[in-house]
Length: 106
Image (cartoon, rainbow, N blue to C red):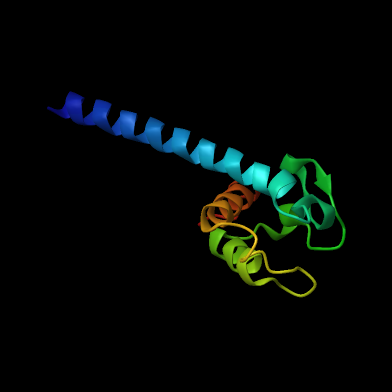
């Protein structure tokens, strides 16, 4: 019984990691290609190979998923809002990506 529970938990964790990795890949694509203008123009993010200097350095800021979602949806300072040009799924993906590669957390 315990062995079955451990195997089941391990499978669940592996599936969760695979979904998380897929979401991060989708988010990276939004960050580097799909958002117009591209996030890479303004933001430094080492995982994306970007060195933008207009917006904050995301590696240093390490924003949470919620912070990224709010900024992308509504804009912040000079950053335009992307709530009308990106889908909710794309916003969720890019927020997950940025938070996961910077250690920003949930």
